[in-house]
Length: 180
Length: 97
Figure 1 (spheres, rainbow over the protein chains, first blue to last red):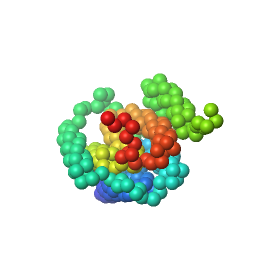
Figure 2: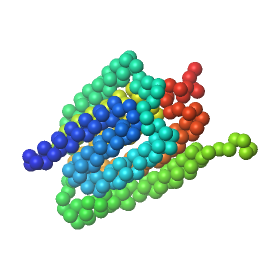
Figure 3: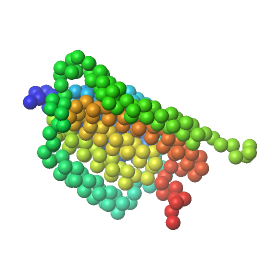
Figure 4: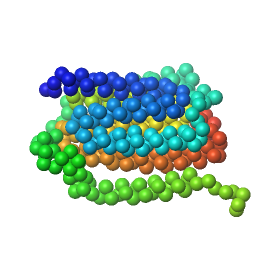
């Protein structure tokens, strides 16, 4: 049973994450929305660390908050979209109502699933094991399956990244129609 | 804390889905998709405490795919903006019947 301090912090970060994600969805300005999303991601990183996934927490801050969101902000800056749009950005009353109903239905479904009892682990003792983490370290315990069982998927990921780089450069390139 | 994590993940995913459905700014819709991916990552991490570290490996893969998706998607948004001078989805209706 986790201690009281742990639980209070867990609920605190969870509530901040929910509050800042709601603020993120309702902001008009894209820059404000992006910064609230960064706040949500920081809270999630704290939760990852509390769930014994320290490496994922660090990667969350570095890759998500540090790299992906900076790319988003760069695009907002490049396209000069920082000010709220002149046309209504949020859909009308009926669209909002339908979206809320759909979101609530989705939430009810996932909650009903989460209330079910979870199946037993496939391999006994396959969960979080402090001895393994002490031997391999927080990074090693992630790297061990990544470079053994999931090596093929890891190599395919590198191909995916290469394709994404080439695709982004080709699509984002400025074409000179008049030069042709 | 497994049940709380799964509930938080469900709430964040629903907020992201509502954002995708209600907003018209393409960049904000993209960010909502990122929020949904984050919610799924939280599920993976929470379940990895019970079922083993393979869940954390999947989180690494999801983050890589999210990075690739953000790069290509934002390039497409820039290309559309050059063409149409807007990122509002109301005005991007080439495929509308």
